[in-house]
Image 1 (tube, rainbow over the protein chains, first blue to last red):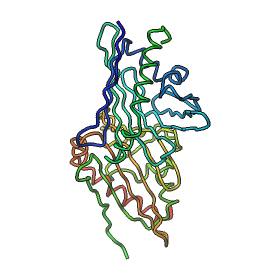
Image 2 (cartoon, chains in turn blue, brown):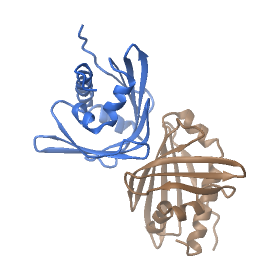
Image 3 (spheres, rainbow over the protein chains, first blue to last red):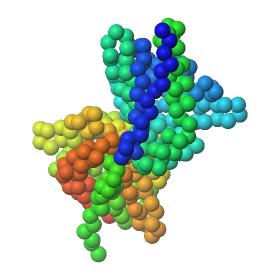
Image 4 (cartoon, rainbow over the protein chains, first blue to last red):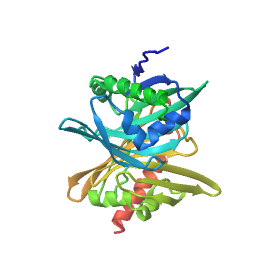
Length: 160
Length: 160
């Protein structure tokens, strides 16, 4: 049975926080690899319309990362640092270089649901409600849902 | 003229953010050095009652840091990553290891006021009002004010 699964994307009612939740037919180990191995990550992250190249990537506590996504002649750089990388949780910073003063603190949790299923929860904290809402209104849900669909297909295709 | 200066420590009325402001008789370059050179940092950071040892420290965009403060037999570890290190702004993560799930996103700005004076602004963002208030009620203002008094004395003594 094929399901069309969309991620739940919710703004906190009071705080400058966005929470994203989605379940996968994958183990926590598979989702961890998909988020920490740069060659896997660039295959699924973001909308279908972009290509991603890794600039640098050191997925360990205290490491850092940068990648550049392109659509035709447009390039979008992103970078951050890994505050914590552990098997069930990743904490990192995130900046889109088109708005270099904006920094999000992101936490990802891989929750084992048993039977090869995992709930991915992601929390992004920023420093203003306006910044949060600008991000929500940027069309980010396309990237989130298309990205996770590619990730799910990689699991189904045995690529993780 | 000697002034007894205290830092302004304010919780945002609605958001899980604490903002600290203090002016120094120092240049932005001096305050930057005090926050990025580990041998200088350990001489002023925190309350007078503790000793600090650096575990690792790489103050550049994408670097990371850890130090351990001790008071008698008690040890307190802290660590984080540097999201951005630039002459007038530092963005970093911060965790006290006694509460390892708590992570703050900190931004420091060094604002040149001219005539050798600088306003230091610090913003700490966490993911809940409860976490923010627990930190505010922990006696943190002693560490903030005693630390900044030591920093000001280092400037006056020509150590920066």
